[in-house]
Length: 144
Figure: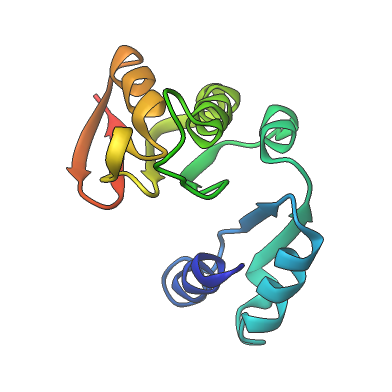
């Protein structure tokens, strides 16, 4: 509901003012909450979209420097592959051709039962020649 958007927006305003943050959530309510908690000092660095992230990423026509994937909630009681794992993998596939040589990928809800949300995405990134540089509650990836 906007906590990461607020933090990243603040970072951009202080350290990379020529950058733009695109925040996407399927919930109109979450988008509205995010807009409300983002300080007026850095709202100009953020564009919000209330739509499915996979479709947004497929149609996104710019290079991505930093990609943070945190769709869906993680429910460890789901057997086998969960919907959030499948969704995150599809987000990553939709984004891969938009990443540049110095892009960074941050995956949320990683260190959880059954591999957390990031299980399938991490397998895909390894196959796509990305390197994991942090693998705790969140997982951070860069190109080889």
